[in-house]
Length: 465
Image 1 (cartoon, helix red, strand yellow):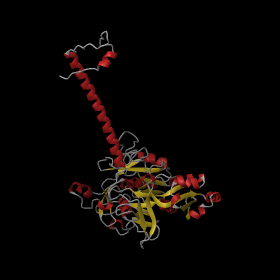
Image 2 (cartoon, helix red, strand yellow):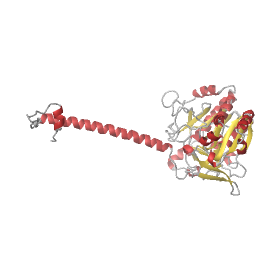
Image 3 (tube, helix red, strand yellow):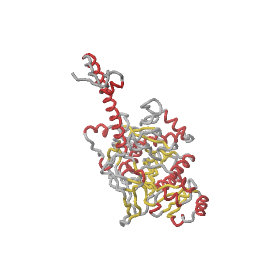
Image 4 (cartoon, rainbow, N blue to C red):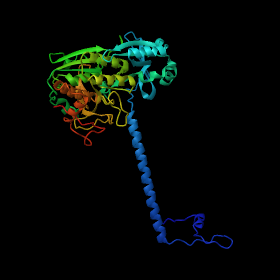
């Protein structure tokens, strides 16, 4: 049996120790064994309770650390160096794709302004030194705004330095020329081919689903280029493809991601049935290869791509890409939405603890997450109040740039399902605005998670017929 004692000073302070005349302590009589046993049990219970609380706190801390780690997990195959030179066919560097603040990437020393002609002239009057930094100036005809690119000295290549050296009124219109990325979560070259493992044979040999609709549809994509040589994407009376590149001359064109997305929309093969049976697809090629597995697009290229698509009469645009919020992109998204353009974007593959990604997180954009065939959420999908709808995006059979058929996963693969749904809806009811489109789609969903809209599935899952 263990013993239980209190310090003499403590007992003295409680008036429990008798004093002699010369203030010497008298011996304390032993406590009864029954009292000692009760105190032992009480102490053990309190110790166990404290240990349990401590362990619970540690587990919660570990969970938060794990989620944060997964949100920023880097595959050593796909981790980019701080500087990625983007070169032309002669091996000359056209620009440097560099790591900048907050783990983002941008074109080195390049900044963008989106202004009216009068605003730009006013700015030059107040800060004439800007003209010496001017790199290019183009008109986004659909918005009647000037997209101005400036190239600054290295010592000014941060917002704090620019604020000190340029007029304060510039800040709301200024952004880095950020780099955005496609949203297939795993290296495209490493995913399964059309001869999958035995556990996936059922998926590969399932009879393809029916098209979402049979009306003639026109829609746009901002993506990599699409391989024009894939047999499943051969142009026919049912499928027309118009492509335009927005890369600087001589930069190697990437085909991987755009070919996969186009295969979901339009692929025809014994293993594939298109989402849209009669499609005219306008593809704006804005992405270059960052390495063997990843593709990047500058904000400048994306804005020019959107302007071209809308100028060609496209109303519905698929954007299986993500990147940072910034005032220039937000201004374009808002302006196009006011004109009736519907943008559908991948929510992102950052994981459940990741910050919102853009353009999906803008309220004028339909944000799409991914589920598997069991309607379970894709484990790497972003979550948040901005999620609008979910669709199949895990182990999706589609076209590959090398001419094969294979499986791809990610919110990029789910996005064209929702894009096709919206395109079909507008073909039947072109008068619908964005809020009415969302209301119509809500009537088609399988509501998962908590009833109504939630941060995991949005309003619910949109399923092919």
